[in-house]
Image (cartoon, rainbow, N blue to C red; front, side, top):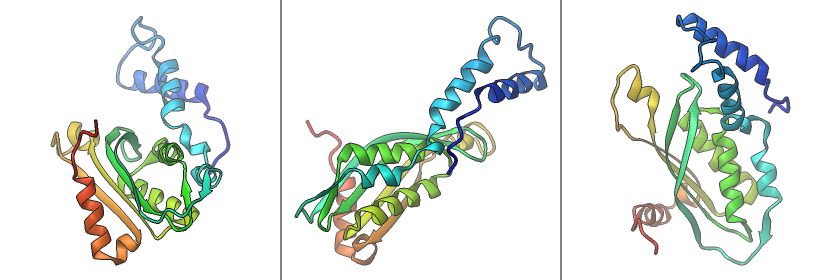
Length: 195
């Protein structure tokens, strides 16, 4: 993992070159600030390269007797596909069954967000989050399910808008025990409204 800060000036020069390469005038009024805006955007949406989600989780562990399912369902997310630098976005479902330790719920969201803020592929994002939770919490089991639309499939290439890609990573009891797996998927498919 790199600790080097994002080089905004270098991004600005690269964006200016792209504008020139497509035949645009980077000095025209509408584009004059575009290289700066794109550099700021990349710093914001790809800043997770410099963060450590494992450390976030380790710092937020609590001893607790709870040993039942904890499910964060319907987490909106987006990430940037490393193949075309276009977004993919959707919902994530992250679950674990504790074994003596729990973690702050917002910490799970921050750790997941950190992984999303890197050039990614959905498959890797799924297993990275599962492994991060499993390795740090040492629970009975972890499950991560992502459902996402990919702009690279919708805007270029096959051009199939609305296609949903689902990936899952199951660890521990969710991988080994059919009953636990069925309970998880039933809860994921549950009602959309809580209140």
